[in-house]
Image (cartoon, rainbow, N blue to C red):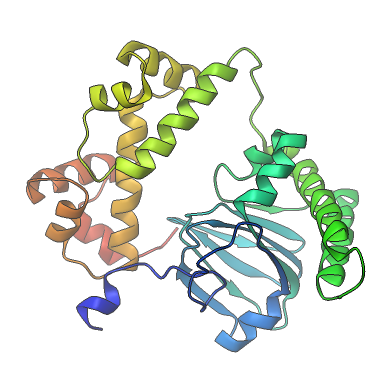
Length: 296
């Protein structure tokens, strides 16, 4: 592979398709077979920078890969892939199910009516749906959404919004047992940490100091630290380092960039310091991590 070919993790709108210039209210539904069969039921690691996905598997086993995690699932199963997540799949030939892709705006609309919906897309997750009634409700919703998406009937947009709401509600219910308890006394902390994570996402390659982050958020370092500890149990520097480590792992697994170049792109002036940073947190040096590949 050429240097240009390995430099970036593939960024698609739908798998194999260039990102859309404008996708404010994108909602797309297709069967797993419609796209995966073309690629021998293997979807290689890629990312959707501004699009979220729900993958509902009704029949057929497979493997879901999200960041550095690998999950072997049995049907029925639900995989939630937030925007910006490096992910891929290996499906058993003949797998039956659906892939729902949506942009931020319809998700934001749903979250305004039911705030818990937003928490579904905080991190990637694959859930095996052991509860029969919950999985049946999810299957009904996704089939109805897919049916409506394929039609050109009057009221189509209204019906799509309705069935998407039902699908998200069903996903929320089946994931309820996996959710962390909500602490109603921490809404301001969660809001600040959310803004901090957005800022980290934009700036983690810049080498900004923690005082720089606090100033950009218009809070004191103490306030930021207390909010992060209260909402996540971790100080802000650990959240920043976790994001840098995640990106380092992505680049080591999904690209062939030299370790030194990865270090420079992540804001390290000294590749040796980057190696020490990575080894201390990952338990192995970057070259060994790359050699191990994406094993679970």
